[in-house]
Image 1: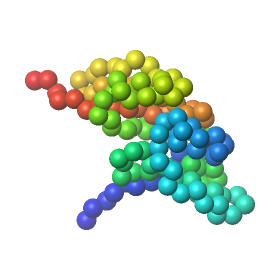
Image 2: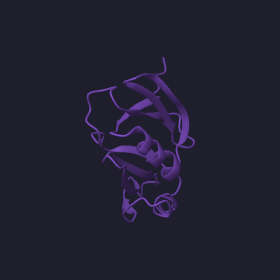
Image 3: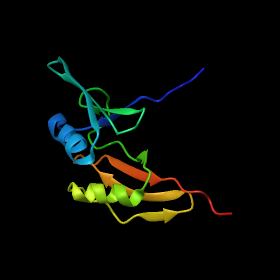
Length: 124
């Protein structure tokens, strides 16, 4: 039996601002933007090439906006990913080399944090 993680809530305070950030700046694909009722809007976004999406969370969970920490995306090149973020107005620290990968990081406007990891072959 396969178990596939396909949707992760990201708690935000302003869906329009968050959607613009993730789509226009980070580069996620906008999959769905459906008003469910007056209190709920379902906005699903997917990183390019990913099988897992995020849903912008206002009134879906009890997590406070900005409460999601340490989400991680694997990228082919951490330096290119960092440059993409910088080119789109997103602060990202210099790439950090660790034995298990090369990392850079960013936060969304609400403070949800992300790590971008380039996988590396461990040295013997």
